[in-house]
Length: 345
Image (tube, rainbow, N blue to C red; front, top):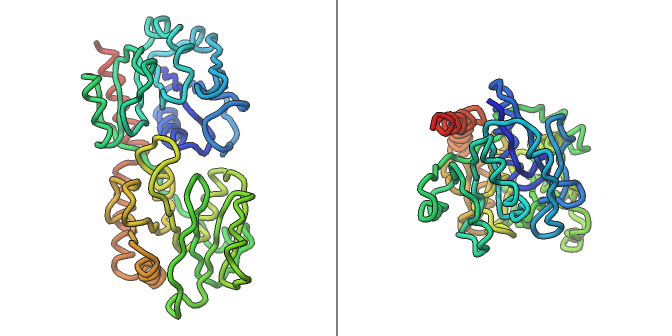
């Protein structure tokens, strides 16, 4: 099967985190793939997380800025399936002008990333062969499209790293417990109430340059601040392998995302995840992550994790099962089954 995917790619956006494991799984299954993506001058996300593969063509900009679209790759290349991720960010009106020609040669599939119905009329000008959503809270699309399907968000694969090697690469202490406080991609800093139970634990604050988190702390031997530009996927894994736990403190997207894509990227790396109890941003995860209501409960959860207590072990086992169930291979197969059913019509 020949698949064309119009999406963010090799950037830190949640859309890319959804699209990349699927696209790579399709390739491993023996399908052909071409990715149409944003230009490097006008893209969705804050930065690039990897080098482009040979199958990536950067040929359009965002709807917010340039509204640029080069129609030639869409019209001259051959493909059976045309998948669009996150239509709201794409140059909709230019795409609409060539959509009838795309439909003549391919079945069209829209993967919805919005958390509510769009108020932009141009969002609804496309006659999709199928519409996909990945969270039950997006079931509002069924009021518009009777050809909609729920296909879960794919996880990044299970992977193992060497803690000692990762810490050496990052210049981190080899003999201390380290808790990673992730402050990129719109996540904010939240620390536990510290007492003797967390004595000697290092809190590694990972932030973009210019966030000025240092001004919040007097010299503290148990706090390390690392400023990083957008992380490559490999660099992010190094931090996950180096850490004994990660705090993801976030309540909603700065745009219209439904779920935390970052948590689906992290789950397979084996690093215990702690998130705010009041956040609705980490569905549909339950036992796979540990939740805290305040700094005291965060401290208690961290002690549980760092001592490898029963809830921490249960969380790890649940995370492994979840990643296996919603692996890129399994979700990619679900998509292929949908594509095959469309091609048979």
